[in-house]
Image (tube, rainbow, N blue to C red; front, side, top):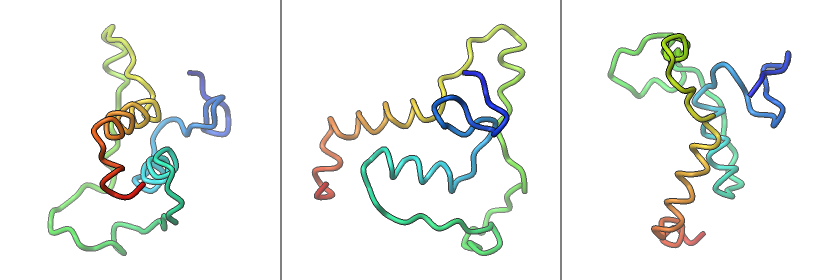
Length: 96
């Protein structure tokens, strides 16, 4: 899908890369939750004992340069995964 100058595609999906905050918001929205998601910095979170790189974005450009089919957009993958969870009764157990 082509990106617009705003960094979003024609469906309003953020392109390029997303933060864990954006990812979590999308999952909650697609699952039908109204939970408020608050962004925090890695420093504010501070619970992890593991050393993490400041920038750990996944770059898929080499895949496409070498003839591989582009991966599906992440919101579609979230939607498909949530559909699997619904079929398995995951949300029933949560009272959703």
